[in-house]
Length: 278
Image (cartoon, rainbow, N blue to C red; front, side, top):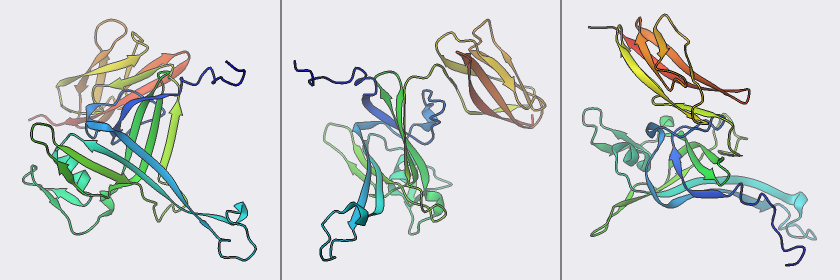
């Protein structure tokens, strides 16, 4: 082997593995395993993320100016898309694939395409994948809208597949911001997520929250940020991976679970709606 037939020793640490997942929300500052409620769909064939610039050459038709002179290069736009094949046919997924559509208020199994586009049809979409070193790669597609419509391909003895293409859009209120952002980081020292990010509890009644932590067996501290509406108490012995939330008075409260790893603090919150008893 020659002296230049080498690769960096850390070449495989940042290698992206497997298909990753599409999410409705994600916090790259606290990259924990996503709850089912944020996963958009099961996919097949992987997920294609594209962030492609379009350039023009302002000197192309100017005499005596060489082509592709860097001082005459102009960035026109960015095309930012995510595309995949989904295995789901839930009402929410069909609505998203259509782009402009509504789920019927009285019959939630009915999805109706709409003849007009609303600003509420746009939303941020995330793709998140694993790195070989235990870290993550994430892409945020801003102001995303499905732009290729709904297409369901069925087979005689197989599973139906829905092709989805989601496009990011620039906002008139922020015209300089490209609608795609990238994150790549190594493994975190610690992480925490909860079994639910939002729950409802009746006054005088209780509910249970569970925490998933990394490293395993890290002790959890439970706190209510609004003790007048709801209280929380840890269950069992350390590491206190579950807690009981008690509804006190109608209103809202935030229950916070906290861990400390290598002097760094990690939090996970659950919004509690306390409703009046009957």
